Image (cartoon, rainbow, N blue to C red):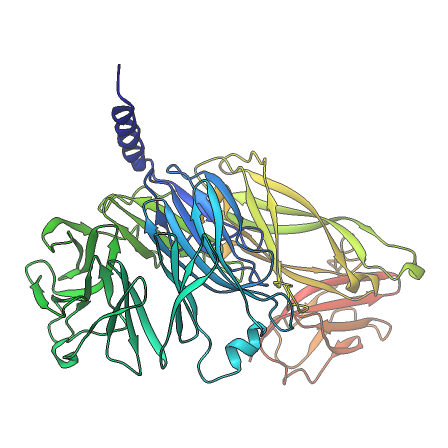
Length: 552
């Protein structure tokens, strides 16, 4: 009979081999969270991400399977979350700390430390904070810092301000505490913490906050304390005098060693620790390169890497067997997040789409009785051409406005599924909107974006936008062909052929603001900014609108 361990090994090998079927993920804002930017890889090659990127800072987590599907997601707290920090402390365990409470008024405020695993989210610390977030953050020259660092033998070590606490989670009691003068950095090392502060030289404390070693020779350490990493009992940094060398300090006794990596790098850019592996990331000439070292700083692997493509900037997260490349679409304020996992030299293929937003038509308008004082409702039909090589199944249409306040994001997406538009076909997407402008007989102007067809990036961002303009009668009554608006483009005046003193002209800018009006013609327009305007022509019962362009 095949052993469970052998079956598990086969499963891992199958999952690892399936990575070649490149999967790209999409996270839509504001309906989903958290960001996919920082991938924490687990033992089964699934990942978890933590973030609070909704308008009111509600934090959450998302667990994603090896092939890209969401396994589970959830909230970290029921209130606004600030100062979110997270550290992977074991293969499948993440220590998450955050400040929980209302932004700007007193209420239930806590410092919360939780232990996340694929099966549970367990609260270790829930300490009351007696200030709201803005008082905490802006009430002094140095904002109060909250972060958890170590979970060991039923004790959690965490920082609140300039004090380090050790709490027994079985009894709930704080068993040890130590206050410092202005803590600047804390690094978890083997069975304790390396603490950097303005009041003491760098000092190693064990997990009971007993002082073990104070460094005495800081001038012998040519590394930036801002960019170090910790592995086992060592602090490691890039030697700022020799950017192809690592400087390693033993936290227990301050013994040092320098590791020359000039055979692999022309410059080392960053360091990251993944479990028991130290990864140096940099360049060898123009080629990206990574070096993997064990806890004894012996070389395990050398792996060059490439970015997914040259079209967009990607941010990379490095793991021993793969990369996670992340970016936003960058097209508008919507900024959906994308992430692709790939082996170091095999980022392709990544599937792109090409959608063109060609038109929006008004199907119908519904008015409430005047005494209801409610906005009009419009049924719109958006026409979107699929220029992709694959059938279009889903997309997102959104618009942006200045936020009303509070938790209003100012970005309003509509996710459309179950489309079946083959390559070259036009998808018709119907949706309702409401408009106070139409209810008050004013022009309704809104810029719409189409994005994320089939949850992929768009290869051509120049045709994803449509500017919609509507007055109540202009859907059925375009300007008659017998009438000509000239000059268009215009500089300082606009006229209409068959001019009549009974012909009312109204000129609106792109925000819907009336900038000029007159009978038969408009003059003195030279001071208007260049750009697109909308000319509304009213003749008796006729009411129509056309676009005009102002030039210098």
